[in-house]
Image (cartoon, rainbow, N blue to C red; front, side, top):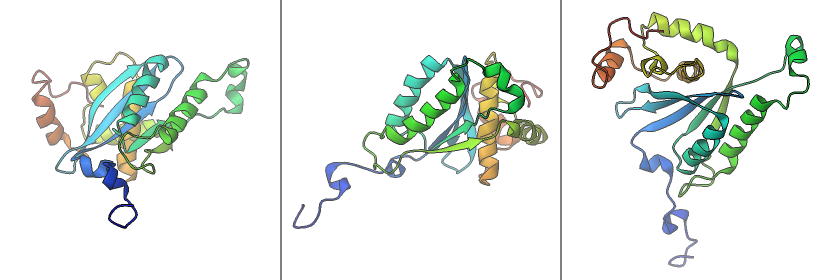
Length: 203
């Protein structure tokens, strides 16, 4: 009770993440048993979304990093490539402990049960699953828009990071969210990568 009325969470310093962030983030994940592809998307103060970072980690590196991000309330959405076992591939997995599917389960469970510090308990980031098949058509959209792959700009060696990036862009497309065009991306990247030529790292 406070002043004769039921105390609110705000009275104890608990605040909504939405009130604290001028910018908004979500994370796209391409899970794997050896490498985990990651791409972080950020909404600028002008409301336009862009991929701010892409990279890869091993599952053992990824999980502590992911938990830390959840606890700090960094992401409002987690976009994850789904995994399904099809009959034609079943023989390959005989005897496997299914590390990729277990990792996906951990991603979903940690998002649900690792409460962000200082945030409302009902504000766990929502996990969104996407089929692997979205990558080819999404890459086609980005090619037509003449956008660069941030994973390629950062010279990430393998393709898991760029796959995560594709899942992030697919989320933006599906939700009709505005993301940067070629001119805006060029202006942003020119500040840190003035050496990029017109054709460098296009999708």
